[in-house]
Figure (tube, rainbow, N blue to C red):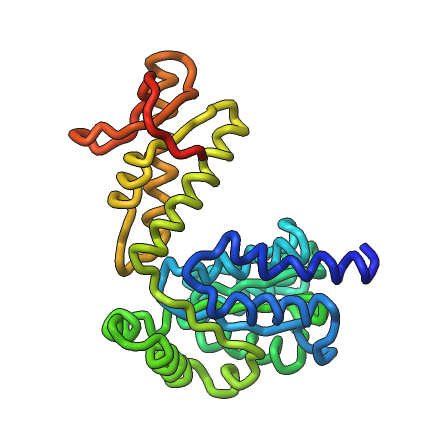
Length: 308
């Protein structure tokens, strides 16, 4: 892709994010700009193309937003995710960088395979302090040396960190202005994470809690995604308005955000297809609600349906 094509493609990043991420319009222009600056090599050399912290309550789209932007800019095969809840003890550094001169570690092997793209470290607050030292090296020196002696540079990577720090404050302050919640969240980040690490981050994005109206939009989006995926498997589904509202009620959670909603949509649609296959041998048609059993089922008559 030449520069003109690349620029034209990058212009569409913000619209791409808006089509997939709900309830976070306040951060999407900045997130898109950070990725575009990096992709156009406008940032300072010898450091990551961008270093980003995405913080806020669980289930608000932090990881999904980073993943969507990475896949749009670099391609779906160029996203690497490390769950830092798995790197809480003293062996975490060896796990990442290798045990001996023959072992490049999980991070080294990942960088060998993907010399360009997005690196996302989920739940940074759970990482061992020695792992935090590695992040300082990445953000400051822009490189890391693994146990084999090989040094990897991050000059072609966008590095992201997610955190749930401040989530309890956001819940407690649910009736406050978002600007106040944002300030409280960033104060919590500064209290918990080392100042030299926070100071080296290029951008910090505070994600908002998802209210019922936003979760209804997400429910509709998830239904469309899942029905499209199932259509690719040969199952053509239509979802009634009644069924859409049922999925919203079943999946809504004020504290856990969109994750329970996504799981509810997937489980309910997949279970309906499974039961129809067992009883009829095929599964295409319109879905309604069995209120008593709290599940979706195929109705074989004309009703008021929402095209999925």
